Length: 232
Image (cartoon, rainbow, N blue to C red; front, top):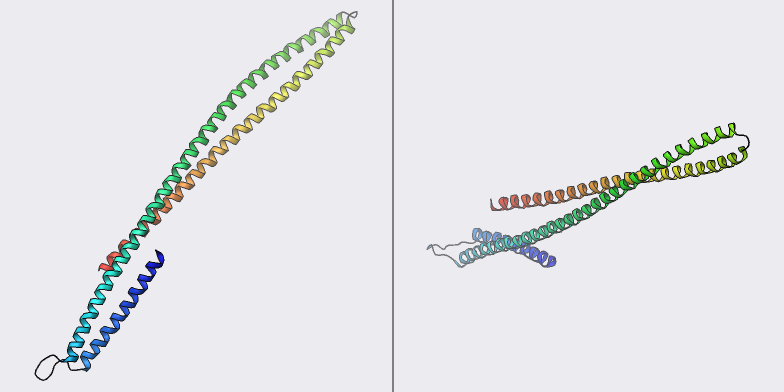
């Protein structure tokens, strides 16, 4: 289709050139040769010049109409291409919006799950801390009993050692729970950053679509101004 359009454009250019040259030639003949004889009748050269000028005018008029039709076809093709581009842009926009909604929904679900895990972790940590406080009180009581009763000091010391081991284990549990809570907080921050990146991507795509729309509108305005200039 593009090759045919180029061929027609070249052909119209050649026709215009031929019409222009022929008009000049016949006008020159009309000036050089006598178009009328002494009796006022039109001579053969006059008839040739007049007929040539009429034919040249007809060729110029037909070439002008042909050129306008070619321009109209090219404009229709350009309009169809612009409409297809706009439709594709709208489809891409809808796909981006659906993807963004899915990402937002997933991020919201992850945040909700993370909040639940954090609440449970905090509850377990509080229970562990209470248990540690109780165990520390027991250890203190046992140390008082050891001071008062020397006979059972060895058994109490063993019990204290066992309690100390329990304390060490509970402290390790508290540390692991604190580490888990920190990881959950990091996950929440990562999901928040993901939401921000998705929103930035959506805004960028919207800006691109708006830019394409403005370019198409500008092209249409330019074409309309060219049509007005040609008609003028």
